[in-house]
Length: 329
Ligand SMILES: [Zn+2]
Image 1 (cartoon, rainbow, N blue to C red):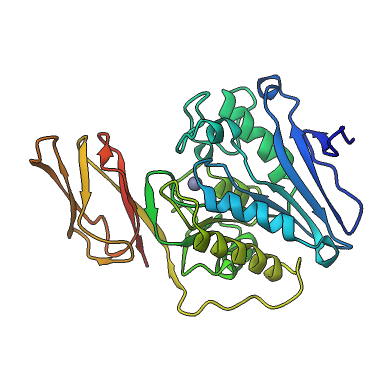
Image 2 (spheres, rainbow, N blue to C red):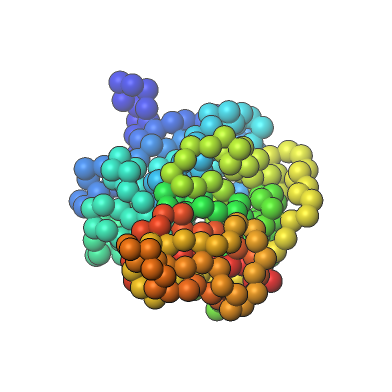
């Protein structure tokens, strides 16, 4: 139903507009723990049948180019040119956005992208991820989850697809990741996906091909990375047959089979000594941790041979804190 502002209101499962139209609305969830919040949503429905794509951003709400790309793509989309449907949630974690929280939801301190498929009997983030998984992701045939480096991360643009062991799901996810068109793809093998609880791992586990894009970071709203994400969304929709036309090819795209995070043994002041996209060999010194007097208290080595995918850009690190990642072939 419409309210006085012309926004459509739905509870739990978004309803579809008429064929060939799109509709902005407000989504609420019936779980009492989520009653104080509402989620902006845009649903587009093509004239012809086709895939049901879920387009998410703001799972990490300090990641701005993905949110900008999601909003702009849906504003500019002509639904008469679409086959199938797109359900777009530009901001999955509103409490984190308005408090400018990196990684975690401030209500319970949990990282939503470690909580999927969620738990209706858990705390706020478990309940929210459960509501999103049940009502948005499970209702889709394909998932595009837009991310970038978080507020304290500097990264090389890449797209992740996680092996689920279901050959057909993995084939389509790999095709989506390559079509997105970022310069690097991280295609992890089944059983080699350490990040349980992500949108893409939980979707793949449910038989829904999914990708996670990564372009942008450090809390910045940047246009080049927004453009990369916009191009990626359109290319994946072409790949899936939801939009007319050929996928724009990406020359020189390189694929890694794993992203290998490395961590600090001690708290202190992190100073990387390598750049993004630099090739490193396993055991090579790639940075140091100093104390607050400037003494080196730990030398940091590359965990594997490969290329630097991302680095923690903040010098402030806790014991066992993540410092970056190396992609290995
Ligand atoms: Zn993220």
